[in-house]
Image 1: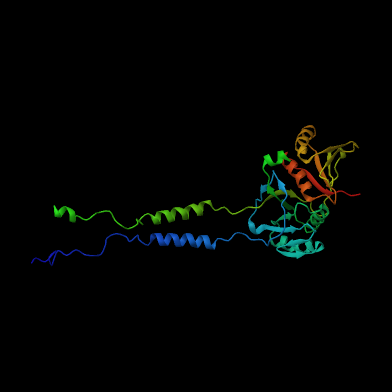
Image 2 (image 1 turned 180 degrees about the vertical axis):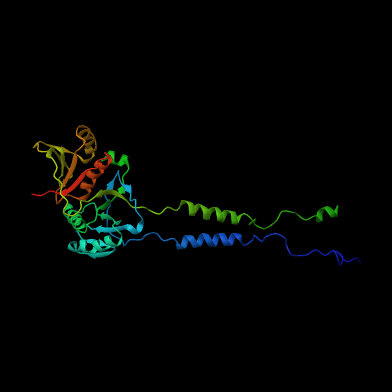
Length: 149
Length: 141
């Protein structure tokens, strides 16, 4: 009875190929990791209806240099999710503006139905704080919608 | 003939998983490439410096008075003649007026009770017409 393979010609069982069987697991792990860790900027839920503008442009400034001022329909003002009395806006904004090396852009996020008197007060407060660059945040309006109006 | 019957079938009974890695990496790259972070959009203006007041000749001012119902009263300089317009007509008006007088300044005066969106409509029209000299005020009296 012959011994199969013989004593000396036995081949090594170590594979010369790179093991790729776990590659799929690694890829799916990465995929799931990115899906789970991605967080979208989450501002506190505010009952705001955006005004629409066709000429709205992206704010050309780094995110850390943008300060959002929220204006609700009743005229209440929120800066960084903290309610701020209208008369305190300039004293809150001025130090932030100085810290940013005068690069701060104020994004006024007002409800479309805010009476203009509140907007005017906020603008006057911002002028007092020395702020120069202001953006009225709005949604991009499609020109077809505009024509229908 | 019994040898033929014993020949094993070569078709594998396992689900082929060799391309799963490719699929997963494709998905990963797809999501990495297509993810866009929302960037804020809006109408930019430049506020005056505190205490900065400029004297402007009345003939260089186009008064746009936004009424609480959204109608815009247009008045040129010192003239008392008022023309009523809808915000979307202002773009054409501005292009026409600025062609006649390139030093023109748009003075947008909004009624204190008018909704903010009406002011944004007017500002939008002015931005669409490439207006650069815009002054925002509240309507007094």
